[in-house]
Image 1 (cartoon, one colour):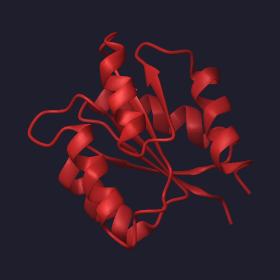
Image 2 (cartoon, one colour; image 1 turned 180 degrees about the horizontal axis):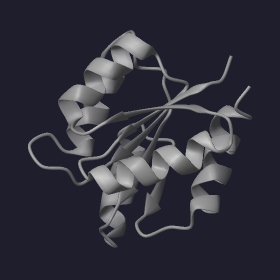
Image 3 (cartoon, one colour; image 1 turned 45 degrees about the horizontal axis):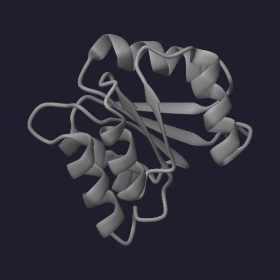
Image 4 (cartoon, one colour; image 1 turned 90 degrees about the vertical axis):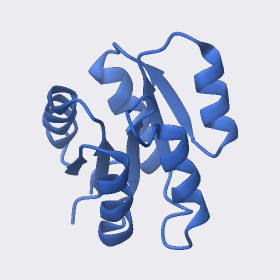
Length: 124
C-alpha cells in the first residue's frame, strides 16, 4: 500500500502540480485547499507526511501546524512547509513550531521529492 501525502495549499495550480509530481513517484496524494480542510483530512486520512503552504488566507500554515501538533491523532505526522516568502524568519519559525523542513517557492520538484524520501522513505 502506498504511503499517503497530504498537500495543503490555497493555490489550486500548485496543488495539482504537487499532486502530479508526488504521485509520479508512487505516493498516494491527497489535496486540501485551505487550512480547515487540511486539518479535517489529516485527522481522517492519517497521512505519512503533510506538505503545508505557510502563507494562506484565513488560517495560515503556522496556525495549521499548531493545530496539527496539538491533536493526539496528528501530532506525530511530519510536516514540510512551503513559502513564497524569502524571509528566513518564516522558515525558522515554522521549524521551531514543529515542522521538519521548509522550502521556498519556486523550488525544483526533485528537491521536494528528495525531502519527502528523506522524511518518510520510498512510497511503498
